[in-house]
Image 1 (cartoon, rainbow, N blue to C red):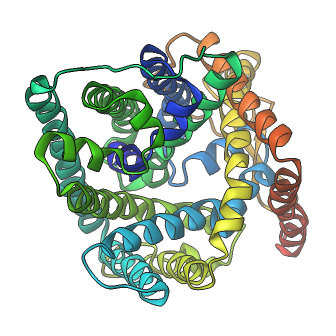
Image 2: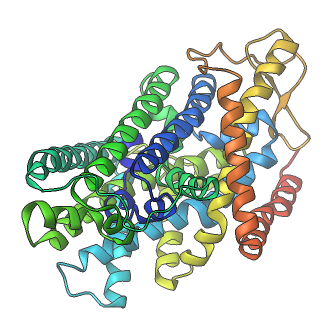
Length: 447
């Protein structure tokens, strides 16, 4: 699930943003490697939290326990209205656009196919987690097989080319600003790694399985990304990679002759469908957990009597994501709010540090739980209450690894605010609009 959710369309279609910012072959590969390492740092912190809190909900649970239910609620609020539903809509549209290479689709047809993909995958996930995870598994295997094929063909067939690793014709130095911009683009290409934590209660031995999945999955994706970009640069001049919006197809044209458009379109259709399956599977588990905690309508905590899935939460996500596709509003919402995800990631890593310190102060392995006046579980700094088990996994390199990740998150957020202050303000306002909703909801909850 980690691998299949991260690898979508971008790595096959458009690494040009990174190549344009860093006009150096070693620099490009270093950016992808550094992006993978920073993502791994976030995954290490997330892995320790996953080994402590094994309730369904993932990041929502970690934020709620480390800070307060209000912070967890804001994560779920932003997820549903913009971040998670927005990315479902965006990937579904990419899937439909590339499907349009094989079918004559206009704008209306593209939206219809995108909505159909959302509804079909939601229905599969509603029928049971085994169906959804099996679909995710087979599409991930196919995706990895395609990557292995591209890399192998690149090195074997590419050896016939007269030149390899051709640098840019216009010599330019790699600047710190350019490297940082490329690093941000690389980190966004690794997005989705945390979603495996959402369905902890449906995972066998989650305290061990989820940390292993996070670490192994991020490492596999990092190897794939570095290897693919090395092949692109091996068979294509750097200037071509920088200009290309379909780099996998351009590489296929060089290696196999014409037909790269069909090859790339089929690959993106396959890859985006698999990524969409994992993202649709993950999201409803957060809304289910919020409803269990009294932060959402209780109906969304219901489990289907036969399929044992949060069917109403799955349906709600499908309807809202489809509406975002139909109206086209996902573009503005997603682009303005996606950077706020990194605020929460930074808070999550900082939460690990807070929880460890609190555990030392309390003389226990993790914070105890109490309840506020609205019967909402909140962290308690005292030793009273239920104790959370000792984690099976502890983050490597603590506290330096989570601190580096926190600094990286802060830099990403600051960069976006500086570059697009108006969009950033709108995005933050949309997220913070959840606070009055939370307090109104908490006030109506019977004590």
